[in-house]
Length: 242
Image (cartoon, rainbow, N blue to C red; front, side, top):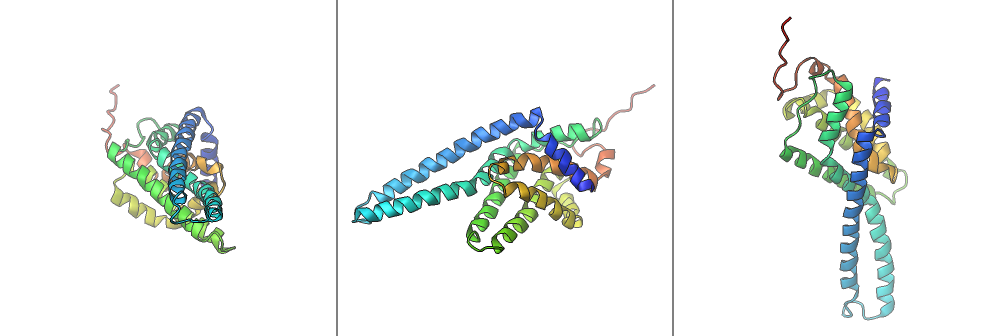
């Protein structure tokens, strides 16, 4: 019940003003990235189909052009989640800080990630999302199996990645991984909730925002001792003398 309460609170928070501002940025940059991919693939297809040595008969080029058009549309649909994850990854640390401002007492928020680490996490988010969606594309034509593979893979990978983002603001990587292993079942169930976002077109653009808001709250529940002590890279607070 506590987990679902955290998910509900996270769902409400992604529609608040700071998250909405980030959402519009993510949407604009994601659409721009997808447009560039579309143009690149279209130019490549035109170059490929315009070679008479490969397609001596016009009907062959027309048929393949139609098939490629459908393939590009389907491919771009599967690229929406990875593209939005890549773009949103550069904003997630700031969003995590906003979540912590709401849920932690003053002075107990996590330390911002270094620029290199943030860039690495953004790239890793995109790679994970791309891998999951590619796997889903491979099993797309296998009824029954496709949905199971999609949700299981997303639940494991998304739960792990978003939890690491939240926890790395408080603990080094080795401790984060140990904590993740101790709560692997809980994180898998939490990952299923994130996977529900990934599975719905258009709504999957909200996945990074929901994931970071949800996992920041879940981390607080799984590691309550972090709330009671200052985070690793912040100086201890000085008690004012009376």
